[in-house]
Length: 387
Ligand SMILES: NC(=O)c1ccc[n+]([C@@H]2O[C@H](COP(=O)([O-])OP(=O)(O)OC[C@H]3O[C@@H](n4cnc5c(N)ncnc54)[C@H](OP(=O)(O)O)[C@@H]3O)[C@@H](O)[C@H]2O)c1
Image 1 (tube, protein in one colour):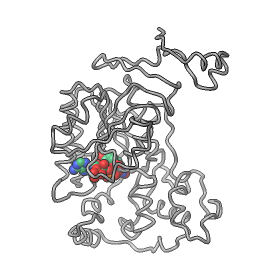
Image 2 (cartoon, rainbow, N blue to C red; image 1 turned 45 degrees about the vertical axis):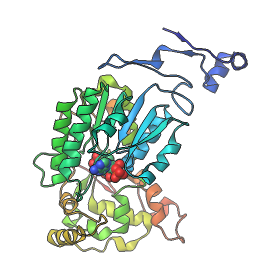
Image 3 (cartoon, rainbow, N blue to C red; image 1 turned 180 degrees about the horizontal axis):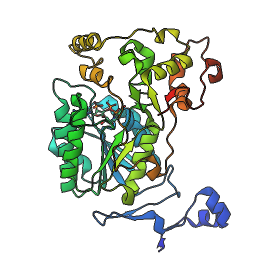
Image 4 (cartoon, rainbow, N blue to C red; image 1 turned 90 degrees about the vertical axis):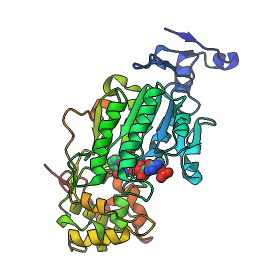
């Protein structure tokens, strides 16, 4: 099926040769692959512009990304906008959304103020969208929002309103370790959140990422700045870190990959498993900071007490719930869930990417030194745990 679209005649004649057209990305007609019919609603989504996305293309989708002002949100908004999707970016603080505005063409990034307790604002944010992402989550409780409010009641409300408004796709980001029996309230409420979302939105996609690493992460950055808080459990806690860029890519692919992802759950952990001790060794080698491995083990009660005292401060430090999580291994992929391979993505390996995020912790004398000088061996078995 071909859908005719007008094109400027001078441009068309200049690009008369098919090879020239292919190389320029210029397209005169919208083809069948530009048209997506949404399974759930039968709504047609028609793309336009350069094939395969890019600036000035239009994917035809309108997506709302709740939680876009956080770490993962910026990578997702960037990917969506790059593919020509119009992105609604709900924000609470004026300054938190400024960096997102530049990620798309003029008019493609639409900031809207919202509050998790304001139904009118939520409805306004997703009224025109065919895809809704829920990335809202908090590592710690606040005076106004407990884990239950954010991960359960908030998630249920967003899913219910998306269903009522006829949204075709609801993609909910949970956690790899979400577990109804976990000692961590964060992980218990994440598990409860998955259930309420599945009930509220027919065919919701659940995404369970492992601990994320990247520029703004709370993993490598914290290991480099506050290593003492990681010297627990004798460095034996196992982690499956995953690149934030890969998770954002997977979330973007899910928008169109209806057959594989409607009503499915994805476990998105990194390809290798590490102990916290081996990750600290990696951070030490890449930053040349010998003080990271002080060789002590902080007992749980000591870190927990410090976290409880720190919790009284108005700015977030390490919360008691985070301390609890530092003693628990990352879970294997939940049975029956899909992974990166089902979306055609090969996730990055931590040792190969970590330097990008850790170079800033080097002293100016050794800032430029190549990775090889740091003694980091990228071969299998050096840092990751071989199961
Ligand atoms: N980071 C990880 O290692 C990791 C691993 C697995 C799963 N996840 C999950 O992935 C999602 C995104 O993670 P992230 O690292 O990007 O989180 P993040 O940086 O903490 O960002 C969280 C987002 O949620 C919003 N939010 C939190 N509480 C809210 C509330 N009460 N009302 C409205 N908005 C609220 C924040 O908005 P404001 O900017 O306005 O505060 C922010 O946009 C979360 O659900 C998280 O649990 C993260």
